[in-house]
Image (cartoon, rainbow, N blue to C red; front, side, top):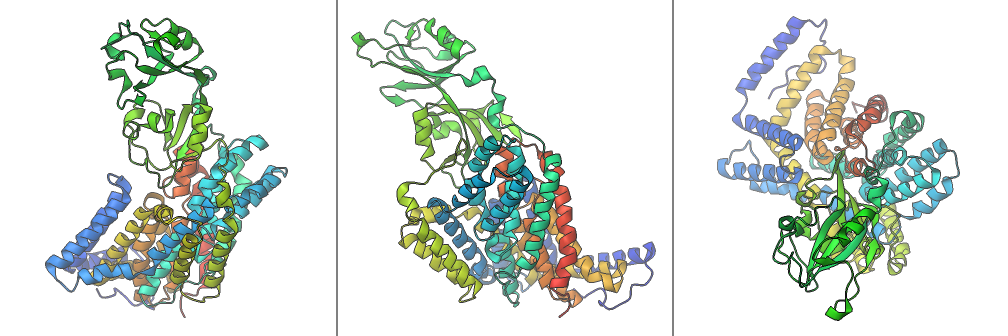
Length: 639
């Protein structure tokens, strides 16, 4: 599509009539555009709508977009749609492979306990005044997140922050949002700090421009890190409310439940009946957790399973419920030697909170499908998800990443659960196995080697990352199976799907169509001197809006090709626009769903949706103003 006006044209005095004439001209261009442009723009709108509505997961949306572009290129064989070879060519982009490598590196450092090194430092700082502690905590977490994927950093430090909050006698909610925001601050300080930077650099390279340097983005990232840290220290006390964790929904009496076992006697009237049919266990303080038959826990709802002689009933009783259970006809709470049953004990159940870990094998499954009680010897009392405490229909709820679970079980069961990777317990920091701690110096040396090689530009970042991953596996810091499991494949699918959409927008001319329309509008409404900075402000604002409701990786992959088209149409260097997009895609502070670390602290901290808006919207505006003012001074619009 032809440009609607040269950059150097003087708009003069603008009027509603002039803007209306521009709108009419643009409408004519729209009617005359090729059908391929209309097709790709429709696909773009559908993808954005699907990301927002969340009827399917973002990776499924991206995969569907990829499949539609492949099918369209094959069926229509037009020069204005990428063919199969062109679409599949997005797999040659190095950015997703580098992102995968950084996931593995972060997993290796987490597995060997390297990330926990910051814990001892933070404990020493707890004696300082809280504002100073908060400032140093933010700087420390940001420094680590500048070189490690920020998700494992936040996951590892969540129980640490809860413990430190108890030691300092401050609400945990005052620390968890700053923890997440600090990891976001750090991600904008280096090329490898977050996947969005790597994707933006990779798309630049695919358009024939130089990649973003290892510390090039630091020139804007470090200043806004300090701006953000100072803002949180000054205003978090007023803007972050005191929130209670999931365990606070229980009364003191509810926390003192006992896990008790009983057996069905030979003369029991319960034989052949379900618990619901018999109606004998309807006491408010007795819950049937599981039926054990011949040493095996039965799957399904225990209240609808016909009972047999000798069945063991695992009961959860409050103190008064234990007395009521003794009075139930047909069951005994104590084993009798004459019938050969071992003594059955009653243990006081301990209440513990845990978070469904990233990449857990229980994701997407219901409590019944998991066989949670049989698998972990624990019972789920409540679930916290997206600001809601769920206590009903727990058995049919499909678990999602970041869900916080309130669980009850014996101390032995809790310690066994602590050794598994499916659920991160939040009562105290996890300690790596001793044999893995011995691998910590190796993992740290590999990470430092990667950073040094990337800093000195000894070879492309994708090569350095691949070598680092191989060394982690060969030295035993991480098993190959663990390395593969550490990669968030859904993110890679989103990246490849959006890269394919970006390729389709480029080939069809949709990017130039959008760029031409935006360029013409900007030239009509702004003086020449203000047009470049207005372009930067617009692409930053749109990216920031996208990243609050879409995947941040999708926002970068969608916006960078459009920004490059805008820059070409206006004769500008696209670099400042791409840098602005990378910053905006990471600066997700206003909602708990725009960034993964926000989602984690959202559930654990018991926050409400509006809590993030209250502290995050001013921070978003602050980032916007500082970035728009500083970026042109560091990266000029015109060479």
